[in-house]
Amino acid sequence: MPDRPWKRTERTIAALLGGQRIPVNGRGDQPDVQHPWLAVEVKHRRTLPQWLLDALRQAEQAATPEQLPVVVLHQRGQRYADSLVVVRLKAFREWFGESD
Image (cartoon, rainbow, N blue to C red):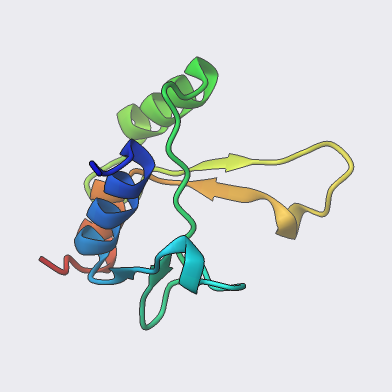
């Protein structure tokens, strides 16, 4: 049986981060990827929201070589500390170390 796209994505992301994909049937309350210092949950979608891609592109264009471009997503009414940070995997690996 061929791999489903989301399984392939999880496997690829795990390899890029130096972790290992945990099969759904053996996970329990574990994340998608076993890793020494990251709890990685992978979401595979056909398309991502254009406004999110535009925000990341804006951060990338404004960043200097010494800066990591990120997008912070804050929901009205939530604590600021609970906001989400979005960064491209390539940039994340460049800043925090490549594993391949």
